Structures are given as C-alpha cells and as structure tokens.
Image (tube, rainbow, N blue to C red):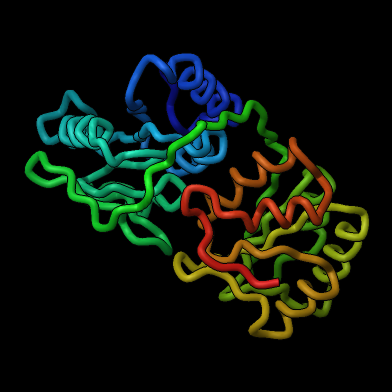
Length: 286
C-alpha cells in the first residue's frame, strides 16, 4: 500500500488502508497488513473503527528486527498472520505478533526491542499460534456482516499528559486548538488542584461551550474510575468530563477521531464512546 516509516502515520493513511480493503473486500477471504511496530497499535485501533462487523479477518503484523537479518522475527510473524487469516474462525481487526493473537483495540506496544513487544491490555489474548497451529482461547460468535466501512476521520484530537505542577494554561492552549482533548491523569483519574491556575475552571469553560474532554489514566492497566476520589467526581459531575474506563489510549484517541466527523454533540459523543466496538470497552458507569 505504501512505503512509510510508521512514525509518520496519520489518519489519512488509515483511511487509505480501509479504502483499499473495501475496494478488494469481495476478492479475498482475509487481509494481512505489514506495518512498523511503533504505531501498529494505533493503526489496529483505527482500522477497528473504520471497518466494523467484518466476517473476514484483517490482520496487522510486523517485526522488531528487519527481515533481511538472520535473527529476524519478521518471517515467523508473517507466517503466523497468514495462518490466522486463513482460519475459518478468524474475523475482525486483530494484531498477530510473537505467536499472540490480540484484538485490534487492545494491542499496546510495551517493549521497544524484545520480540514479545505487544500485549493485550485489559482484555484476554484471543489465542496463540504454536507449531503452525491456530489455538483460540475462547470462541466468540463470528461476525456475519454486513461489514461496515467508514470514510472519515479527524486529526483534531489533542492529548495532555499531566505531570506534577503543570500549568493549567497548557490544557487551555490545547483545548483551543482541538475538537476534543484526552487528559492522561494520575491513577484512576482526576484533575489536580494547585495554588496557581485551575484545571477545573479551564475544563468547565470549554465543556460549557461544547468541547469534549475524556479522562484517561497514565496507568497501563485496569483503567479509570472518576467515582473514587473528589478530584475525579467533581470534573465528571460538574464539568461533564467523559471517561476512558478500560480502553487503551490508542483506542480512545482513534475512536474520538472516528466519532467527531459524525457528531460533535457531547451527548452523542458520550454514547458512541461507550459503545463496545471490536472488544474495546468492557464497562462503563453513568
């Protein structure tokens, strides 16, 4: 499809991938995409939203070491992906890497050099590939279609990672330039209260004007829960901040990129954000 360092991936590339699959969807029983590992999890999540209810597998794989090296993992990952894509029970967007089968919305790169680079976050592995055999850990009903393709994404989603003593005007700056902002907070989520500047006031100002804020967590596993502490309860109840819950950052980001071209109404965004797509979210609270 393209020869591109995966660091340079953008929503336009995801749209192109989805369009190519749509164009040839009836010609093949499955699809395998070879992809750089650095942004593979973002691509897997993005395609999960752009291509929904697919009875055919769309498998994304890659390698930590180039294919021309003797110790490459490229050949085994590619063969495993082809085996899985040929399986009768395979469907939807998945990542196959180091013998593991991962839902497209749950993959995360956790290691920068090792062969076992990817993990399934807050969701079980779908299966494994060993000695040339595809072994599924549990059987899910196969999507019977019709497959649904989407043709629009926005890049107007910002991310602010909180650090101790960060000025609130940084969040204000990002919010002024994006249609939605993800806040990567500490622990189960919440906004800090410092002597200078108010994060709450910034968020309340923008949500009053219809801006979308989603609270995620910097913690890799188990997700957010704004109902635990006052710093979380206040922004959820009084400022209308939404929650990422157990979704990965890659899933939240690309899901918002998919949602916003459809609607910018906060109530509809919240509804779509909480809708389970390709196993991306297990639980929500009102």
